[in-house]
Image (cartoon, rainbow, N blue to C red; front, side):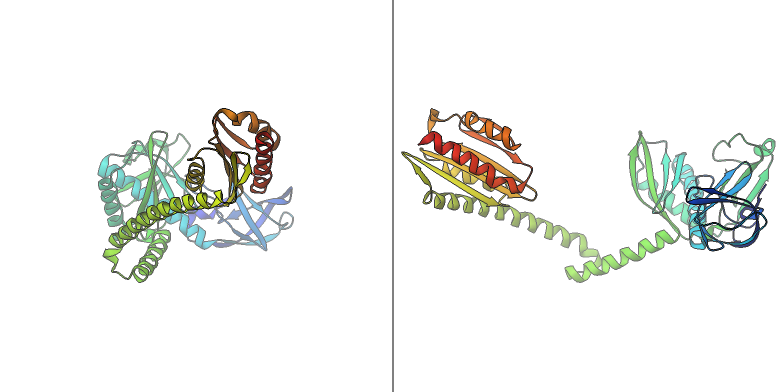
Amino acid sequence: MTEKLYYQDPSLLEFDASIQEHRADGTLHEVVLDRTCFFPGGGGQPADRGLLGEARVVDVKERDNEIVHVVDAALGSAGTLVHGAVDAARRQDFMAQHTGQHVLSEALLKVAGLATVSVHFGDETTTIELETPGVSDKIISGAEELANSVIRENRQIRIHDIDPKDVGRFPLRRAPPEVGRLRIVEVDSYDWAACSGLHVASSAQIGLIKIVSQEKIRGRARIHALIGRRAIEDYGRKVSLVQSLTRLLTCGEADIPTRVEELVRSARENEKELGRLRLVSAVADADASIQHAKVLGDVLLIRKDLEGAGPAYLKAFTERVVASPGRVVVTVDRTGDGFQWIVAHSIGARVELPVVIKPIIASTGVRGGGRGAWMQGAGASADGAPQFAGAVEEALARLLR
């Protein structure tokens, strides 16, 4: 049985121990020590990382009362002494996350009667799933204020190792698991929870709690919280962002929303005007293209290859060409990796476009459809646009000669 130093003193991060077992597991190695500070994970809290000798500890797990250290290099045979060092920043971060989650879960319960269903400690946020479809801004604000007031009061965190028969002494937030002895984590006179995770010594060590978002999942609300240094670092980033925006927008912090709203409105108006000008340009471009049309008896055949003109431009160009009788138009517009195409005419029943174009679509792998005097579609490869347009142009020219 491995001596669990992490429960005796969570602040102890370096230790010396004797190897009890050492076995290879593929490219990794599993090491069992007589004692360890490496926490194998529990209560939703991830396992520690760090070093054993010169080897990196990539995972830690508990197996039959033994703590198994998964390392990336061999360490020696049984009896070898080894020095261990836990990643201090990671340990402190997740202890703050875990204790902060206890404080926040109790705050949500006290403020709005919202019970925590599950928790997850991620590398970016801590999430708490609640038995409700959504949480109002008022509840979030109230829970944050209560949780942070508990942090400011610097309440002691106590660990009670008890027999299950004594569980009635504690007003637990949720029913404990059915195990042997129970480990009760108490935030002084505020919250009690059965938990196998590691925790900070006092609430002030949590630092800060800020709920940043929520989502709906399986009919429940999942809130995302930044706790401890994560919240403080995020605040620093937000301050830098606001300072950058005030310089770029040449306004005070309080005026940023109004200034951004003005810019968005102006951008929309400009985009609308730009769209109108594009259509005017499409009409002018269509009129100019008539001058270079291929004359096939009493029919003018116009082909136009465009680059990134957009669907509105493509449509306006085509409509302008066939607005007068006796015209056939083949247009392609290469956009990114693919292309859009339209083929249309104004020569009555002389040409049924599907009869001409469907065989070309089938042979080139281009998508599209339509009937009568108008067909359109898209191609997956921009490089295929000239080939497709050329094949259609040639087929129509043969038919109209």
